[in-house]
Length: 78
Image (cartoon, rainbow, N blue to C red):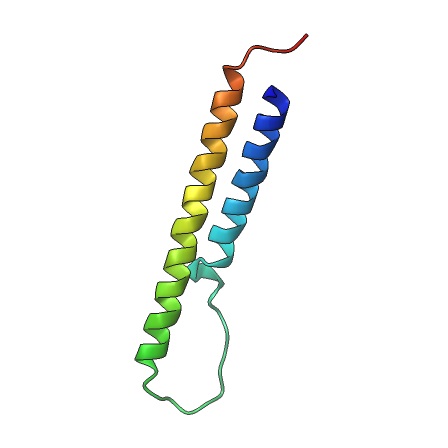
């Protein structure tokens, strides 16, 4: 049970970090050769969606870390 819980925690942490990385503003680097238009509504929706995914990723990381901590206090099965 200890190893299983620790493994699940590690997998959740990895998934959470990946979700945060994919939705981070650092990854927004593209060159668009199009006329300048006012797409502020579309940009706000996109930003809001990315922020929700980033929050979700942070929650996954926290849950994964807590599971790993809990697994440290479970007695070893010998």
